[in-house]
Length: 383
Length: 134
Ligand SMILES: [Zn+2]
Figure 1 (cartoon, rainbow over the protein chains, first blue to last red):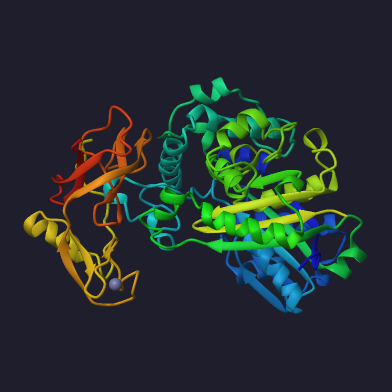
Figure 2: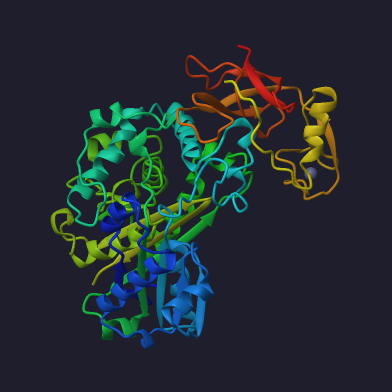
């Protein structure tokens, strides 16, 4: 797997402009529009033509067939997957020879279309029962699941709400220096603590944005990537482990905080890449809620079990900290592209395109996702 | 926490008996594997441990321990005006049940022992909730 494939192109929609348009009552486009805009930009970034692509993966928010129709693409291999699994599947398709150049396209009109992630019309309830099973008791929304997780975790290890605030504060450092971020204002720990609770113990700044947008990546087989790209970003290693036993009653979240899955994946990806946590320059974490970050820091061995609060406050996860994390601002402050925009930030950090938020000499970036029981990681590297 | 109605219950193929037993005799009964004795919640087609299809609906003791809890400060469901609490209770039989404490906690309740209370909702649903006993 090592260096069998590389990202050669990235693109996204202008979600900052669209944020303002949607808030003004406009509908800039549907999910296919956002995907198409991102794809157009990714082609330009890669400097290739559409007919050089022979594989297509679309995100879960668009129908595969319709997205291919809108993009006007006939391909010899295709699939539909979430952000992190799209990258894994693109690599697998390339390694098995099913495709050589794969486009990954995601578009989401969740803000303008009013998609609900909690309450009576909660999206995804048929897939993930925990979303809706507990509605008779008023338990709904992903945020509440993470609030429940954080309370149990904080109680077990003595981590405070103020400790958790370091996530939101650090990510605003990045988003304040990211022209593509929706929330550009830095906040302090006091601002964090003064914000209202949504589902206690989580506050406003622990929650992701909900906005429209699209992201596209182009991943190519190694020899093609070397030919086409000046600065290919290599997929060095990937790993996955799933925990679904007793998931509806939240067992994997509340008893072990997904840690066994992350530890399994840590061993897999670090072994495959031939490196350890100390060799990682930038950490990117799927952050629908801030809580993902301390749990991932511990699960992947960046600090000891129960020590994430101390690590964040003493070592630091902001720019200039020991482990700059979600340097774009992430879902909390840049854009909520369900993990897709994190891949772009991994690539930009490794290309050295991040301007004021650039982490000096970034060579290895780790992306971690733990959504609905799936712990998945990618290690990206540059030449 | 005052609610006029109960938000919709999932009523898949295996869900009705639990609610029917609550209606009939105000008892919380859960599936218990006839072959290995493992308790099952939420209801489902087979035993998670041994995959047996054979089960009996047996009454639980009603005892449990709070393993986490939250306070909703924002309204998501029209039936549940905020604030209100939601707890995760480890039943003495093993499974975790997501429910409510009949009184909002005034302090951290993780680790506290609780006991089952069957609450009559305004729409007639009998909802299993818990109260702190020690
Ligand atoms: Zn059994």
